[in-house]
Length: 204
Ligand SMILES: CC(C)(COP(=O)(O)OP(=O)(O)OC[C@H]1O[C@@H](n2cnc3c(N)ncnc32)[C@H](O)[C@@H]1OP(=O)(O)O)[C@@H](O)C(=O)NCCC(=O)NCCS
Image 1 (cartoon, helix red, strand yellow):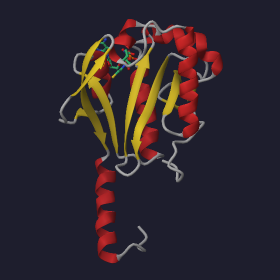
Image 2 (cartoon, rainbow, N blue to C red; image 1 turned 30 degrees about the vertical axis):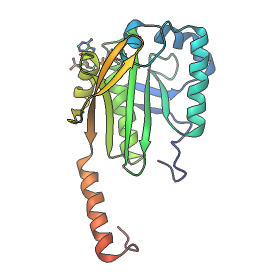
Image 3 (cartoon, helix red, strand yellow; image 1 turned 90 degrees about the horizontal axis):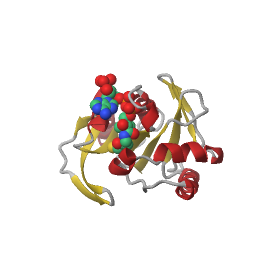
Image 4 (cartoon, helix red, strand yellow; image 1 turned 60 degrees about the vertical axis):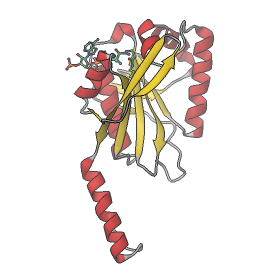
């Protein structure tokens, strides 16, 4: 997080053969084509059908959330141009140093490693630049494509009780998956112990 407690805006992130960039107003047609999809309606809180009106409202809300620094919401592209999917970071808790991530990829662009690449790139930024030590995903156990992405990116089920979520296209039993940066957690713990022992003015 920045010192203002807001997530940085605007950003673009590159790596693993992809480029994540901010949504733009001229993405409307591509956004509608990506999000008007039964799989996305089944596994995410997205409205269905997802038409141009929904798309306009979606881009407006995304822009607003970016301006207020509440979430990171980026289009997945290979070269900064056509959006092929979306990756998000939200529910950031600066005190707990944890945040939730989410992703979707357009039906025509699946099984090419895009979701994995996007999750790795945004997750890396969240850990290394923003300092989050625990990243979370909430996935229905029946959503095998998403659990495969999570596992492949190093996430593990946290063992927390599932969250029942009743959506318009069926209910979901959301399980929590986590990626914990053990080295940073250990280092933070050591810092806290040192602070308690030797006072707040210690530099570490
Ligand atoms: C889940 C989703 C984002 C995956 O996107 P993707 O770009 O196809 O995923 P990747 O290509 O990065 O695949 C990563 C891993 O998952 C596996 N995988 C992807 N889709 C799969 C499927 N339908 N069945 C089984 N495994 C699958 C891949 O094989 C790969 O693992 P591997 O390399 O070890 O074989 C995409 O299917 C989607 O948008 N679904 C609808 C929205 C959604 O469910 N979002 C997540 C909500 S929690």
